[in-house]
Image (cartoon, rainbow, N blue to C red; front, side, top):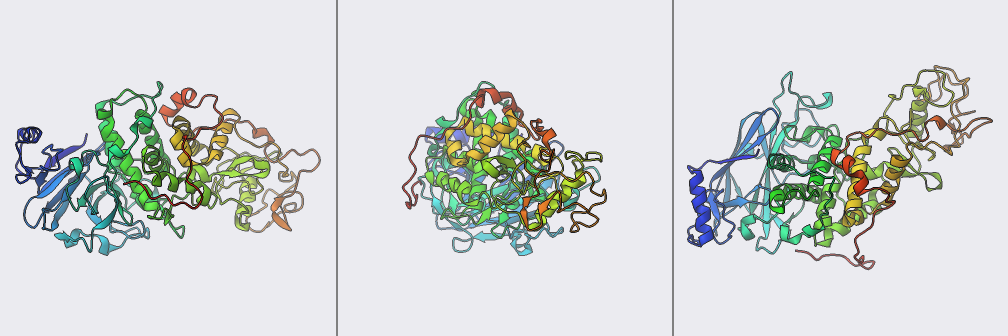
Length: 611
């Protein structure tokens, strides 16, 4: 569970009496309540305090973040958002000072950054050279630090009906202290990865209801969005009998996952650059998987629990608010205030899965259509470049409109990728007429068919990463079927048609005009080295020498590269047990997802409403 202790000398009974005094109206605004856990939801009588400790407990350790702050030497106003994350605000006419940030318990060193950016932040220690570390952004050596409106506070874009005009996010990260039995995921990130994050939000004023009905504002981005639960149409969340609710303990654990984990540092820059091994190092290892497909798997199980109908709204508010705050973080890190991409979700293998649905879920529930209209443009303007959401990017339109699986931008692949495809195909020895032993684990295992006829990857269609990503792809489709608002926001029926084909038919390798490798070909033919030791490559099989985007077509008696795999079931990797159990109820025999019954804005009209 999430344990929150306070540095002041206070007791539980004091907190209970304080909450009672607020409820009875005994405490006046002048006599603000002591301790940040006072329980007040009356912004006229806010809590006050000078420090908090937030403990994050994983399966094998507890990490405690210790925060100290004041308002020009006095207690500052403080409280909790609906997600349980903390905010602080200065007293009138006084500055807010962050005096100390430390950690106790498990984990290694702690670092912190003020309004961190994907490309340049001071979190962790930079020892692995991932490319985004800037030592000067780490504020812990400079504490205490006075938060000033001109230097640190960012403008508020939507204020949720409050009088807050600016805010700042102080993000702290504890680095893993590696041992022989507890290390950072894959070998590429051993030496530097995150255990957990804690976020303290500085507000210019006390929020409405002391923040108890508000999502935590975004930790990154050019401005801050304040979103109230009252700005959301929570009645849009459907109920399905096959989804299971959570126990109180599991609800707290799920909320902890999304409050102390982030994907902001695993996005791609506008130039297409990403940091560390697809962002693995920056995922919170204490509460989350370090592989994106695993993060997506957890997300969809938790999201499904919200649609079970088994937990009353008050019980699941903490989890819902944590998930939506997490989605807001991603949204504001990807799009600027004009609704344009200034970063990308990115795609490749299974490294970037699960990033799109969190902001989509927020947009689907919000009555502020800015989020929805912005996200709808992703499928229209970005998908196909290779930088759109992983789940959508890997569904490619081939010849005759058929939908096939694989990495790479839409359109013509570059010569290197075409050569890679045929090299892996020949090396795998799984194609029709191959004389060697089939080995699908050759090469990148992600490349799509450059000629647009069949599913990738090259060595064996439907294998490896086609299976890895299928679980999150199925889960995304199910949520598009479950909520029309999600279907509208994703705005891409290609995923629907592809996943339904895979589920109902399996691998697609039929109607393939490309000839398989010639059975007379030398076993040591090296396609990658420009056809070295190859006798028939470029003559009876492979790409046409005068146009590599076209293949040499089938000869007499040939029926494509992999006719024997057509209709083979694809294993569902990283499946959501909730989605699999509810598939017949949520998806069943549907052939497409319906969109919400609302008109689109006229062409050229910019959506700006919502506050």
